[in-house]
Image (cartoon, rainbow over the protein chains, first blue to last red):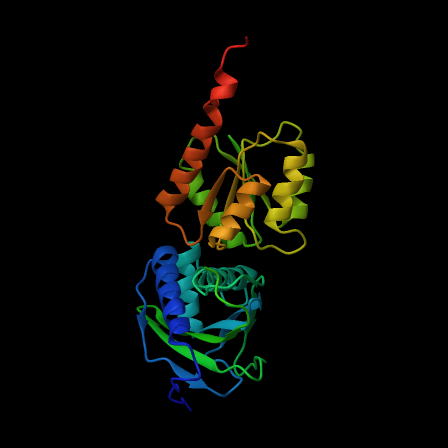
Length: 165
Length: 135
């Protein structure tokens, strides 16, 4: 069940950076516009949908970001991104989902104001899979809607170091 | 024209190929999925590449390490970093390591083509020191 975001628990700037990033990446690389729904907190360890592209953060920012797609939406978005349609079991499908997640995380990272590194992407496909996140960091869900279908960006990160100038 | 594309994402390499093949009729591509594979491809082709495009975050050997390894022996081949790493500190780090140009993902086809053409043009333009007649 969605939980309203408490003002003191999540830095709103964090959400702004990822909203900008996801809209830029999907618009530039996929060629569709993304409409953003109301961000909310979630407590469950299951992602919003069945296809997850996962990026880890380390250094001045730690935690993870998951881009969670409806399977149909993922297939359509990957077809536009890669220029070919791939079934979800194809390695090329996972590769494309991972690269989209990589670009969304990387583009947001530059605005987080800390020296941080991102991992190479991991992709998990399947209904009801569980993602372990940092226990003491809230998970913010940013719902995303496109003509190809829905997905969500799930951010569970915290800043450890002071902002860079 | 021989280009080496180094990126752990095959999707990204295909996107780059589809954009860059429009530059000329004779563009040949070699692909590598990480820095180690790139070094193997470079060693296997003594004639060398006209340009190398390098991702930053890759398994086994990252792009920054690869650039450093290439520049130990080869100061001339143009190297272009194509990456999500967009912070100024990262760009400076890459330039210090020896890249000639920098493309931030996500990119439009025009952006990538423009940076690649710019890099070729710079590489073909003699520096003032190189162009000066010998005393």
